[in-house]
Image 1 (tube, one colour):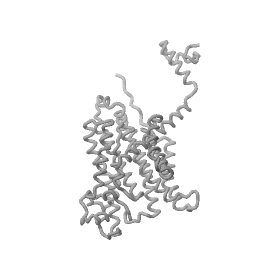
Image 2 (cartoon, helix red, strand yellow):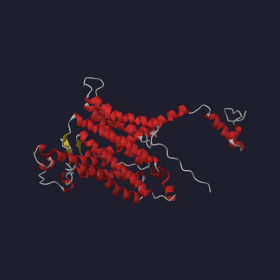
Image 3 (cartoon, one colour):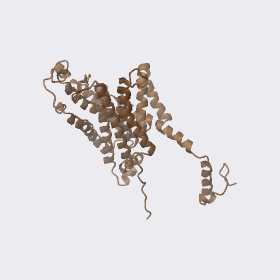
Image 4 (cartoon, one colour):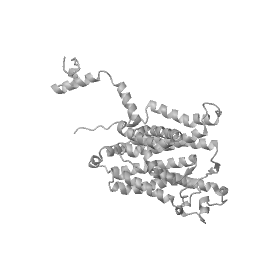
Length: 404
């Protein structure tokens, strides 16, 4: 019996990859703070507070796109409900920020203003730990993770897949949005949470705090990227890709797809929850609109535009799409949604592998040696005559593959 040789595990990143990673790290932690805080505002090199907030917000979106790539690009499960997990993480952070307002609200009460307006006398039970930053950090991970676990367990156990899974994830998100719109749930209703004052008793509307949140978001994105790279390169990641390509064959090979799909589903949801928690203090508001179907679809579009199953592609896609959105919503606000729809259709028809896939195709063409067609012709002749290809190396071959 022949011995099967498993592929050796390569380095986490190539030399160029590590160079790009450390360049990004320096930009996030050193270059951007210097350009924002120490370069004069009238200098062309100055990074404005608006740019800091915009890039910080897009980095949060990039984390969601990376999470989508893990579940869709590498596992073949298209989710149209990741906006729910993003919003849940945002609401957990928003509850803490509302408690940090204290008596500085309009009604000078220990309760958030919207509760005073609705004549509430005490905090609801689910606000019990909202005044603790440590408990908030735990809830940011636990709440999206728990909901994803329960939903995923029953969905994957029932072997729901394909378009049916996408539809029920979107239905789940829409149902949650309707629930959060109701005032009696204690989440601020239609207005949600806003008017944040402090975080860890430090004023939130200062240049230093904005830059701290910016750097923290960048570090989180880079950390999740390394984690995803390690995960996909492991045995676990190879099984995920096998499930994507041929789930039935994986089952016949003795693997149960359920724990693999459920694990990556929960990891993806937690990543979105962390992104939502970083998003809220930088944007200054969280409301049920973050659970809209359009937001979840946009996450899938970022991954598709950049390139699925590439990790770096969805991050690039998030920056390109949201950068274009930021410009188009100001210059041509009535045409933005048409542009988004046209972009998704164009990518589906003409760029199935996204921008990164197109770049890789161009690079592979440039690296293809001119002698490769001749080598293919020699192989064809060898197969035809039943000899080893090496035996024909010394024979000239014409353009049609025939021996000269």
